[in-house]
Length: 515
Image (cartoon, rainbow, N blue to C red):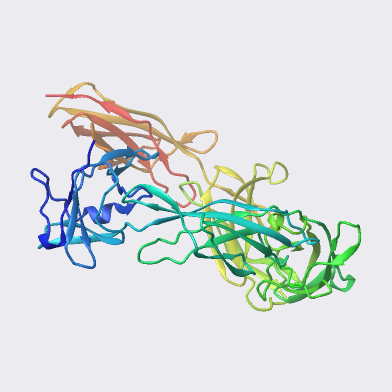
């Protein structure tokens, strides 16, 4: 298919949409994303329901519209809800950046830019040598080309400066007549990765897109030695502890040497601590609820210069954690709510954040404790937490250093042992009767003098509608007449009235009402 692309000279003074094309609604800009791909096609990411757009390109230098695109092929995205509209590669009169618009000349919306500059490509990146802390030098090379979307021709980018850099080193090299560059490159040995990037300066005619690659690095064995005075950490909650030690590497000849000055370690309160020239370091950490303090390299297992090494220091927190004002209750809907305050003596130094608290359940309060949920509580701040409960059983809370006594939570079970709407079917306007029986306790006994609520859900509806109520007799039975109106479902509900029972709901009974 050939895209409907109309090219106009600047003197034309603007373009109208092709005959038969329909102007795109302004909302299309917000629903999609327009951009130029590598070959110079116009790509629009949009919802599947969007019709194919009509897009105009405006020359930013002359202010004139120079092209209109109205035909696209579609490519469905993986999530199946979005599509990409993709035109044929556009052939515009000059390279540069054009404006994208939808709508008429007099009433249009700007939708971003269409990058029609030369596309730079950095490829064939390589290094002559792998690097290590024993040999940080290598030579990197790459080939740089440009792709011209007007002619679809790729050509070497000759005699052009390229920036070669990583986290610590930045230098320049110049491509030769074939677009190739070769340059010695020396790492510092403290970078968190061994990637090297090639960057170009973007211009009005060239996008300046660069690339990067990973130079092979051989990590060395290492040792992290913590000073005896720094371990274990024994301090009050919230205190600032100092961890001192030395990091050594084992060179290829087996000798132990300090890691490079500036080797980054696990972040602490100061940010990213680094080693000194002799490999020694000092970290500042806050004492919290973690049992250990870990010391390793920044970037952990992915640090390129040293094999992963982690030193754990035991943390012993001084003081006492306790629950105060603790209460647990179960409501009529079988929801358990815990309230209380998590305290610590002596008071923590500064803000130490929150602490995990776990809720436990046991049938007998002695064995078979099961975790039922976890929440967080701030020190000295009242907490409230609710979770689904059981009809009967024991509950308790625990933190890392404290646990409440088990408390039994139960209410009296309530149930509808019989529920029926009759006769059925019934004619519209005819009286029918709902009968049932409400019982409570275990074993079940009649529950007299209680209010029963009746609800009806018409066929095709989602919710139940209150219709009336009745009071149970001494034997727990209830009777209520209703006049038939339409087919649907009836239920009865009991809602706890004395704060000691669980709610109950009857079975659902369908009643057919004939005209």
